[in-house]
Length: 284
Image (cartoon, rainbow, N blue to C red):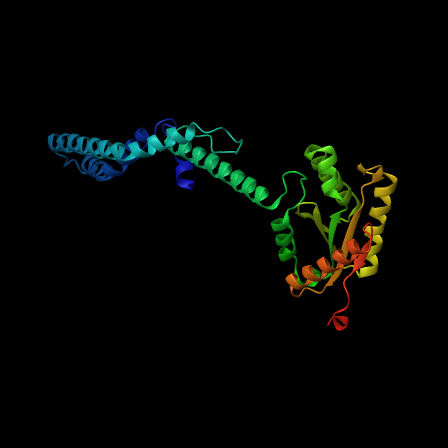
């Protein structure tokens, strides 16, 4: 790249002419040496020198023609890439085929990165609520360093959500889901992970929290749901039930199962409440 840029002042708009110049100079070095020696010693054969020079020029032209033919596929590729949209990447100010190809590759690489980011986001983000989906939530937990893989995991379920859809339609149901996701995200800390677990269920990871802290945080959200409801069913503010389980960085599947059992207990106990998973030593 350094040599390419250093020689860009030689016919900057034509790679063929630049190659010809470099080839001409390189192949004529022996002739120039002979010319200098002959002039200095007076032993130069002018006719032979001219003939040899012409033969060298012809050979250089043939070589250049062959190089040009070999470069034709690169020109075609550069023209195809040049049709891509500009992305604002700073590039060397050289106008030949190499610069065009370089610019096109940069644009395609940038577009590919953007596409990969879009696909990654689509795979890990819930399109309705804008928060992480189940896969994104698990990926977020997996990305945590070992010292931060501890806290509490909560599974949350919106109470009587089916009635919202049945009585007010699915559009209102979607609005409630999006509003609830916004409420959760707004009232959580930056280090906590919030996701739509599926349907009307959501998941939260309270990093470095014990059950008391997680319960207090969810109770604060529940109170907010009553004072500033996101919707109502039969005139009652929409509420949620939650199950909490402590996580020490071990088996996630077991932790989610225990949190789900605690959620079941909360719903069986009348909903609009928060239950904790029973300690392991109390389980049968």
